[in-house]
Image (tube, rainbow, N blue to C red; front, top):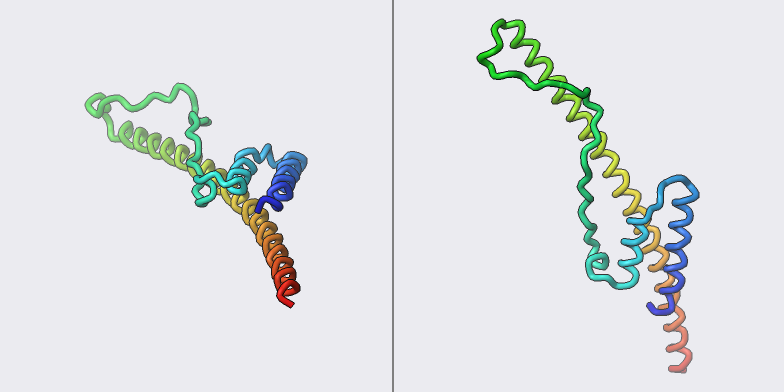
Length: 143
């Protein structure tokens, strides 16, 4: 493993540079997670992914929306229907924004997993090659 560590770290640096040049952002979280996995950090080595950070919601809801007054102040069925429609539209808008954010986080998570798979495949290939080399050396010494 110690022989492969510099190679893997170099590959991670190349991956980070690729992500920067391709406009996919810094890729910092994915690359850092992969580096932690390669260097033996326990949380990354077990495959656990840290939870997403909680951000303040960015909403495109109209400013100045006033919530309904108490039901006793609404007098007509038309006002009640308008209030119900407004509440439904507001709920649908919030739900649409939450779904959009959820899809964005899922894409980010999948990209991170794909990067990790690529690094681990290369690492596995190198280890198999090293194993074959060691087997050849052992068999030649046995002869």
